[in-house]
Length: 125
Image 1 (cartoon, rainbow, N blue to C red):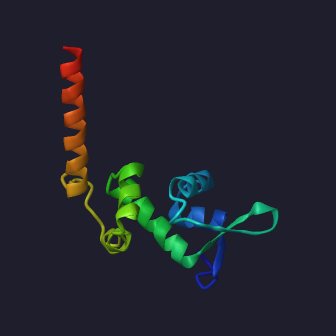
Image 2 (image 1 turned 90 degrees about the vertical axis):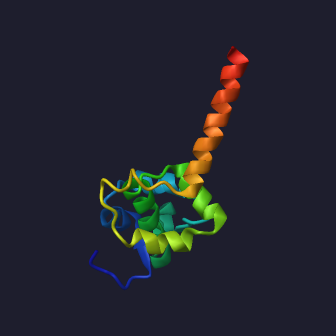
């Protein structure tokens, strides 16, 4: 991005920086309303602050590089561990490693799903 010192960055420049379509950024706004709040200007054009762009980089890293789901990222935001994830997202992960690393939160989700499936199986039997 040419203008690194600008305080407000239009959505099309942020989309280029993140290498995602603008509609993806609008979707993330709806999914993470507490974390992503663009400023709207004339004609409802979206402008992002630098700190919001940092969060978008982290969200993209968590979703694309680390293989997390939208729900998993929402849990991180809800638990207040997002700042720690920002630091972790700055360190690259090898493609083979991203499937080997399972956080304790993910293990809890898997246990919940197993429990629900077991209950459904006993109900159907």
